[in-house]
Amino acid sequence: MKKIMIVNTSSDHFGDNEKPTGLWLGELVHFYDYFNNNNYQIDLFNIEGGNTPIDPVSLKPYTLDKVTKKYYEDEQFMDLLKNSPAVSDANPSEYDVIYFTGGHGVMFDFPDNQDIQHAIKEIYSNGGIVSAVCHGLAALLNVKDDNGRFLIDHKSITGFSNVEEVLANRKKLVPFMLEDELKKRGANYSKAKLPLRPYVEVDGRLVTGQNPESPKQVAEAVSKIL
Image 1: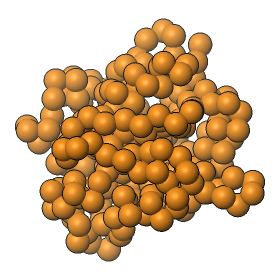
Image 2: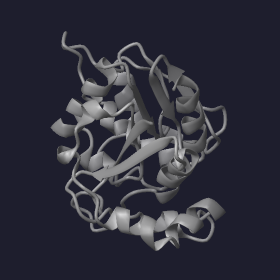
Image 3: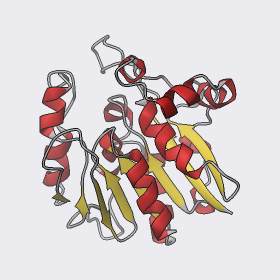
Image 4: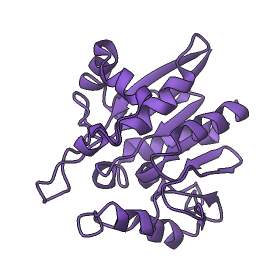
């Protein structure tokens, strides 16, 4: 049985701004749903342990698709989100895959988290798969290898684009523009021709998706490597 570790945010607002944010629920459940069978063990974590906040926009009628709605109405599943262990409690060496969900919350608690960086390095160096979608790429920003080089340097990746940040009307609220920061670390960043369309990049055992439309495609790519 393959083991998958999923990491969500614990941030429920935009830093000093009181505007609510959190996990973009669809980015979790579309990936989760793909692997939700007897061949896989999936464990959910967040940064601080306890409740995982959900971005209210991801629950609006125009964003809440059938799959997401099914999980949102599933009490057992939602209990996993309300009572998640902290990422510091994980033993990354047990896992074949790590997956980072998005939602703007991650921009505040993913980039400098030492437990995240340790988990990524542990899984990647043991031949496992590192995957992320949308703003979840923030988890990869500051991970360095043993030579002090950024993990994403010269890697082909994608992630939430500057254009999409403007379209989401969050440019003035975010602490940085993800696309810009990925490029600053030497990544070969690419994106779909049109915003908010599914898009995935695979570079060896590194799998990244651009936006909320991409988590199922990330799962499919991860599955192929497994």
